[in-house]
Image (cartoon, rainbow, N blue to C red; front, side):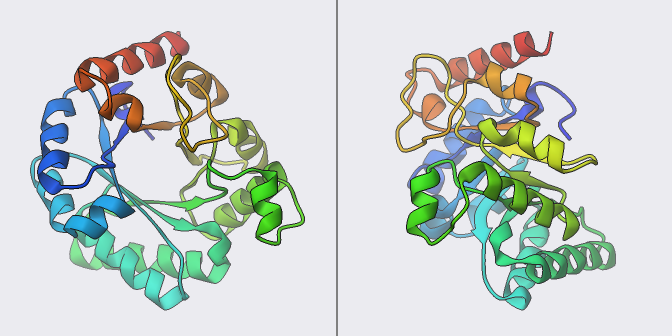
Length: 242
């Protein structure tokens, strides 16, 4: 759980190079509590960018959405913990065995090696998806039902929380009757474009809905003054909490 308003903002470092990512981290570390490293940057630069940010005192959400056989995902989760990430995610639709094995293996490795255990969260339904997207993939249920099912499965399988659209935060809270971290992508400040995200909310709406962490990328990265844009989001979060 986030300890301060600043900690609730996760900046998505969806850029091409480690240099650009680290420069953004340096510019934003005083106004954002965590930094998301996803598939683009990790594929381009590898794990060293994670190590560099962690060594510099930053917190990292490793957003690689692991989805594979249980043994492979569990091993990847251990390596994520060794990198020093604060959060990493797996696809909840990978099933209960995959999630249980990962949670157990990471906890065991963290204890044996004396390293912090990351928060492990399950991805429910991508914010770029809607009911028609799920139907194309062969799912007979709609988005809300699928999020509910994935959240319940993640909770029962030892996950610490989920990634879910802001529109489904209330559903997750009603489904999981315990402390459960909810990370919400698809957050767009008022006046910005939705791009390829379909289920979005403003920062204040996301906070009022019950989100713990808000992931914001393009609205900050494309701003003429990224630090100022991040600070405006922090102020909006603060106002929503009062």
